Length: 330
Ligand SMILES: *[C@@H]1O[C@H](CO)[C@@H](O)[C@H](O)[C@H]1NC(C)=O
Ligand SMILES: *[C@@H]1O[C@H](CO)[C@@H](O)[C@H](O)[C@H]1NC(C)=O
Ligand SMILES: *[C@@H]1O[C@H](CO)[C@@H](O)[C@H](O)[C@H]1NC(C)=O
Ligand SMILES: *[C@@H]1O[C@H](CO)[C@@H](O)[C@H](O)[C@H]1NC(C)=O
Image (cartoon, rainbow, N blue to C red):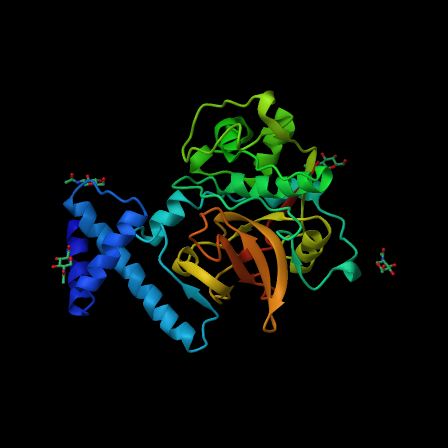
């Protein structure tokens, strides 16, 4: 690690990227993101990774300002981590076996009623963006986001539900807490348990804990869940329009996803076959002739567009956005 670090630092020095201004930016970034490293080796390594990410951001945004690509990158709280580290520690979605879910497939909605754009945030169906931290709990945030929307539709009240409840208590359903889980098994837990607590009652802790579910904090439940036809963006659009926010799985492996700042995420090499992260589709629309999905992430508001990303829509299931889409029924 140390040798790699020296090589990287030297490379950046040779390229003329070490300056007092850059050092200041680094110091500010560390303060802003509460970073304290254990030793010199670690400092050196993190600085090198950060600088590599910064170079990527600067190069990408220079091209973006010339009109291509259609989105910008930026530093965020993940910028001293390598691509591999982020994928390992945050992207904890496990792949589902679709064959198990034949009976959950949705009857198609009436497509002729599907509006050209939807944003469920405007209808109050979407709770504030949270930050999952260094815990592979995306599956819990995504599944509960869809459930929050359905409860809000039924009761008129939007209550953030507790991902920590799912992290701690759904092990016997096949989930692995911060080491990853499944959207479907999150719902299996809520169904089996007869409910899930509110975030306020059972707050998020960024790590595995002992199950402390209590019916006193119960803020929601569901009776079943539905899986959409895999890869069918039209079916996803119809479900989002007629049902509400839908939990989906995406390919979030690329550095451009980790560093995404804003705009329309249209990356031709974002393969639908490399799914590793769960997020929530809260709407869709069209911007300058380009269709997009409006997606809520759980990486805090410093990432993306206040925590959201717009992913290109109707581009052959880009990033696998329609590969595994699920919503619960109360
Ligand atoms: C920037 O920081 C590096 C590493 O801490 C140091 O070696 C270098 O001298 C600093 N450069 C400037 C111009 O301050
Ligand atoms: C430095 O800190 C890193 C990260 O905490 C640790 O993995 C490594 O073993 C430490 N190295 C030394 C020499 O103490
Ligand atoms: C699907 O439904 C059929 C008929 O109701 C039932 O026999 C089968 O066990 C169900 N499969 C699963 C995986 O639930
Ligand atoms: C779909 O909605 C349109 C417009 O309301 C209606 O004319 C049509 O009959 C509906 N189709 C089905 C299959 O319900």
